[in-house]
Image (cartoon, rainbow, N blue to C red):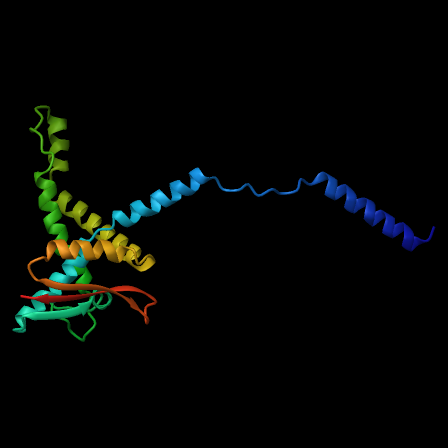
Length: 209
């Protein structure tokens, strides 16, 4: 037997030993139950989109139009979201200079103030008699504590809203419903369109006041 034949037989034997000792990987089909669970979680995420960031942006746009003496306002939601990182002054007017203060931060500040007031009136109990319990109660019901908590939650809700908005166009329906419900006195038209530039659905809004 030649050296070449011996090498070939050795390789075949070695290959066979390896293939016999290694278990072939198996792909288990995903169950219908798991799929339905994923769908439910996805639908819940879309249902729970915070709409106040969009309502705040619309309020800002409408107030700007009114200050300019106009009684009609027409815009896309995508344009407002784009403007949310624009630099603004203390009166929320857009300025060309780059500053640390932008519209998004200003609207979060405004909402967090309302949220802090809500916390201050929510689930308040009688002050405990015992010193340490009373001390903890006072810490938990401290105005500063409420402010920090509210600001953090408002910031997280803004990020969540914008993330869902950028991920899925179905969120446009939730935004439209919130706008139609909250601005029923002034919103005269709301129309969903497909934005070719963004490659996603968008919302055109018309207001008269």
